[in-house]
Image (cartoon, rainbow, N blue to C red; front, side, top):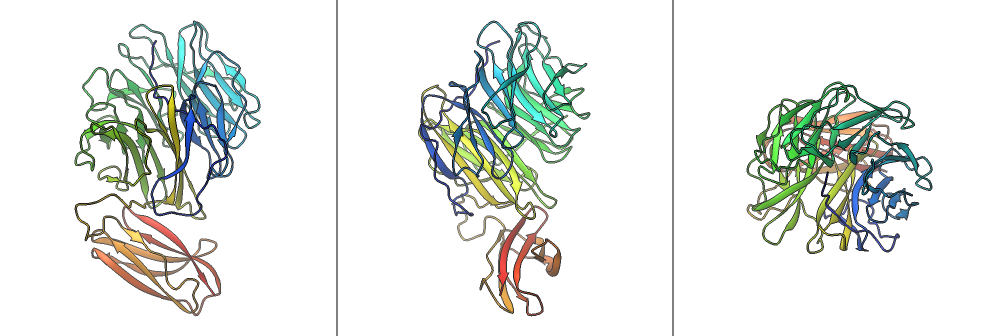
Length: 466
């Protein structure tokens, strides 16, 4: 089976700059990289830990301090090329490979931060050529998908582990491919230990499991082309999710777990050429989605975000990306005292094995959707919670927020332990700017949080009472 993957290139220098805190631009350029080794996959395990694959030279780049520094791990000693990675923490990660010779592709594991890589699974026969994705539910239980065979109607190969990747066993009911259908790199998402989905190429299908990957059912995802590729699949509940495609319709949405799909209209980008990666984060009060793609004759990269379950989308500001490059892969996690912020990394690439690429970083509160919007400059384009003033303060402070539309608002004060102290607002409020004064003279000095929540928006900020 001949597969194509989007290729990007990595850094000649491993030390990169880092901007702390939440800057004004949505996605920041962390480092511009050069050279020939493409990067194919990024996996973020925590706020501090991220791993990125170097496809050509078989290295993995790792950060353990949120991207301040990147370190090159030992290379894989194999004729295979690494294509997908799943990172559990700063020491443990798993790699799936592509076989370039007449043999199977393997799964590899490191438990020492990439100093050594161990082959942990090699399928039998010689037809398993490409590992598309790996997912771990916890430290012991994982699942992975490999393309099997070159003939029509042959099965995918899905294997599972229950002992941290020491051994892998094929599932009993392997899903059957259709024609020349095969998997897509990193096109997988598990909402929990039971509900999961993966996208395919040359069929327009998305597969769904409701029993942790033991059985799968395939559903058409809205693409009618026989060559359609579904590189991005993301769900924010067992029922509601999106998928991206390199062919029209570029973005579709499901509200029944992936059984039926509806094209998403009124996207804030015209002349889309394709969409690729998709990521999401979820909190008790809000879910946020991102998708990436390119548009126009100049192949301009873009990133869109949604905070209403994928119904409406806004175009986010991104740094200048090198000509011919695009956002190839993204990964995100929540962090913060209340799990109210997101740390994400994206890698840019080009469609050849030479050139230059970049690593992008996103660190913002969940639900922040400040967008590019030139059509209605006098109206707020997104809900926003501003920093209180004065800060630090004594006795009282003013909290301001902006609503893009009339909404039901809750504004709550929390102490440093995350315990609710006072509910300042719980009411429907109109579009526009609003101010609320908190009288804090009866409270002890120290760190406090204030949270603004609506149906599809949530943001938290810190303040200090002297």
